[in-house]
Image 1: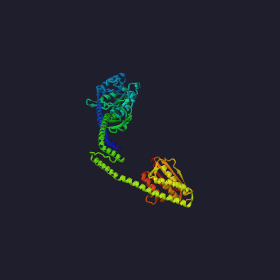
Image 2: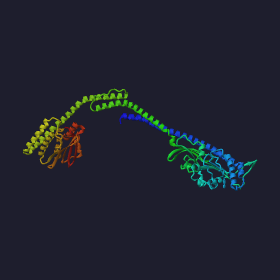
Image 3: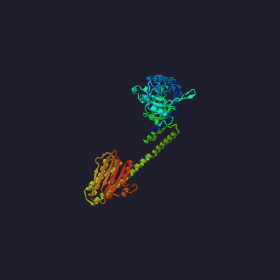
Image 4: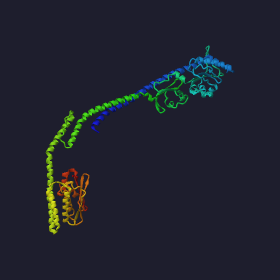
Length: 600
């Protein structure tokens, strides 16, 4: 990654990371504050609703207490059971008037009746409600209901009964099909033990008088008319549930009288009042609840959690826009600063590339920044010094290299000439053979090539012609001892190679490798082109050498001029691109490999 890119990325991260972290913290803090405030405000609303409901329920309870002390009610039932319908109708009218005195001024009741085993008093005139139709509870159905059992168990205390289907509880099958909003009711009931004080004397009914039961029924509209049902959060709602989970009121009319499927009454309503974050149909909702001190029912408000936070996305978008704006500003500033910082570096890189390509005259203009000014000054000074050194040493180095190559050639030529003439001398003494004529011709060719050609680099075909003349002389000298094979025909003849670079290697193989051999010697001279490199190999099946002898042969400080001369020459000419290696094992022969660049 470029330094400029790193600087820009650094500035962007420096701005964006704090912005993202701040946005995250801000979002969480805002959501916590909203939820905390919602908990407090919603619970306060629930408590206020419960207080209003308790006032109404308490008022109803006080009316029932007042009814118990009513002398007219005492006198009405302080008698044997009526024996005919006329008496029952007359009694019912009187009971209706008494009930109207205590409950007729409110239009919130669905029905108000005094229940006995033989008659439902107060059912003749539906003056307590604006609801229609009026449903009277049958005496037999009431006597057989669980509500009557609860009333008897409480022995005169007021009983509050959660919502139920009055047509089924009282077994009034002829009304099963009526509209649910008229048959789903919740009730309060108490057994009347009348004990009025008349003229300063307290009276009670004898045991022979059947105690009537006051049954007050309410439908859901009573609750809707009593307390505020609306919450400031969309999709939220109130409902009331009893301690055992039976729903008293609910916006979904189909749930009235059924068990609360959420089961919050089992786990969440341990305290009398509170809030909790729970699940409803897989979604998070906030509930606030409070328990009525009169009915012991629980008023619950349910608020979808996502509705509480419905305005938070605006905060998130604002944070995102601010972060994006800061990132853009950071990129602009970072680009400007990075440009100021990297421009001198770019100039220096260009100058370094030019210097690396050999242009040491490159100079960089001064920069305003102190650090870069010092660095550039040092770089320019370094280039000047390099130019001076090149000017002083380049020509002398080349002259030394040429002198060393010439000295090696002068050292090689007399050595070779001495060995060749020595061989011809021995052949003239030992044998009288016309083959000497051919050898002298070969020698003449060799001497002409060596003496007249003063170049260090020659064509491969010329050098190989000289080498073939040399090996011809040596094969005749050591007749029957060895033979030489060439595998060089596929090499380009016009490529350039060092002069006589293979002869010392072949000579070593003949003189040293086959010194104790009488016949069967083979020298193989081969060559290959590997890409841009020439690879030559001279192998023999002579006596071979030990590892120590190989190291000594390649040591520049060791005596001898043959192979060492070749190694030094190719190193001077080609540098690190050339290589001479020897692989040998005693009794198995020697392989000498020479690698040089391919030049045309």
